[in-house]
Amino acid sequence: MPNSGSGRLDTQVTPNPVLEKRTRRTFHAEYKLRLLAEAEACKHGELGALLRREKLYSHQLAD
Image (cartoon, rainbow, N blue to C red; front, side, top):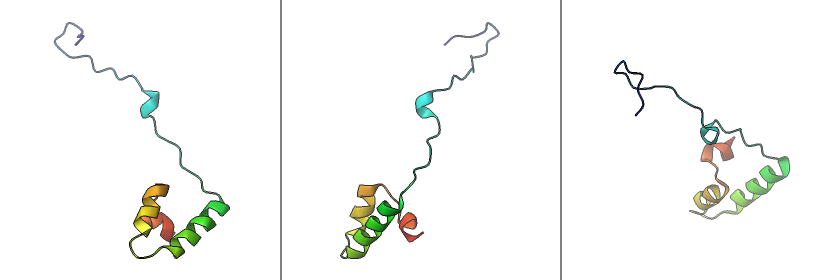
């Protein structure tokens, strides 16, 4: 590791654009209505698969 000669390690951090904060997703009304209809039609145990497929959390469906 490079050091400054004083025995300390270089602690300079360079930003990585890949690791920057992502933007929030937005959901259109048509998507929300379609997803609610699919959730209503789910049988016992199928809702989790729907949420995983759509990459959603259960609280997002409840809101």
